[in-house]
Image: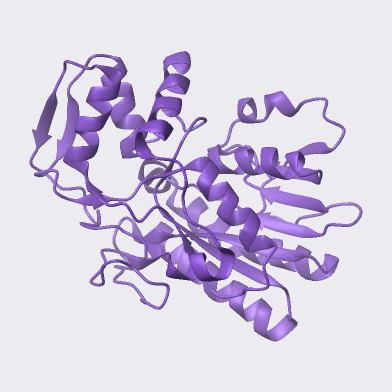
Length: 310
């Protein structure tokens, strides 16, 4: 196949480029570099099967030649980014998704859209199934990301129902690994950076809020299988192993041998969900997928990457 990956210079997008190339496909990566970085794809320079296009997909997308699949991963994805770039986040979710779908329709291509566990908001159902409609504050500070992704899902399904585009939606739960930005603002790079500097890890509230962490290679496997499936409804891809933020901080300190300990800050970040755990029954039955990489194994690889960055 010839595959367009929007957001292809980002953390996850660059790993997707690697996977599709490894499977023998031709890859066109497109990114405006607002949060992505060409160093994530620098190792692909000179690969005859790879092309990079610097472009903002909120503007019309033109690609010469055939495209067999559009894998849409363009969007700011961390709170620090979408709180700083709220309008750009909304535009890429709406206009960017519209343009990417228009290209898929014109090229008669498969389409896969990256959605997020954030569409569930601060969930009242636990764990979260794909049938759960969510508990989202549309005008809260995090609403720009949540609602951009919810709108994108609605648009994807409209193109599927009205135009017959072969669409797929992946709802991504907390993912970590090499190529995350050090100043990403999310808990994994925050904790690792503090630990490698010998600083205490900052835990907000009592640390009892929970997350479920999956290593990036597991996500990439799920995305690859979903694109090649005939399933069109949303699919959760995440690790169902749930742990508290406090437990996670203790694991990071242990692996890095950080003696800085933990400090607590009373305030809870506005809109920050108290729990997050995927129900992956659908992924198991439809894709025969479940995560393989254990937390300590994935963290060890990620910490090694951040040691080099620091």
